[in-house]
Amino acid sequence: MNYLLETVDLSIAFGEQTVINKVSLRIPKQRFTSIIGPNGAGKTTLFNLLSGQLTPSQGKIKYKGQDITHLPPAARTRLGIGRSFQLTNLFPKLTVRENIRLAVQAAQGVRFRLWISQADQMRQAEEVERLLHLV
Image (cartoon, rainbow, N blue to C red; front, side, top):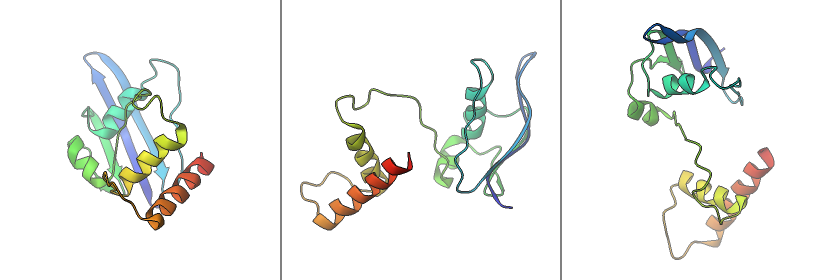
């Protein structure tokens, strides 16, 4: 099976403190996967390793079969790996639907336009509804 993301014996230590210890995981394509655990379990450190913010002490990270262990964050972004931070107040006065519409517009490469075709509006609205239904 081809995996979207895979780690092999991924580890990182800060001094004498090992935070991630030989974590091997495989995330299949087209699957939602969650990383859960209590505070201090290493979730953020794992995401920092996957996104390239941190370099592992040992192990490998593969994306679509390609070893990306030593790629910097910008190179990983160009491959399609993105990291978002929990900022819940960017557009606090917009509805959930409006926030999703902005994300859909960004994903479709739509920049500010005073006029937008009805067909484009309909495509965006359909994608917003699809995402809302998915969640």
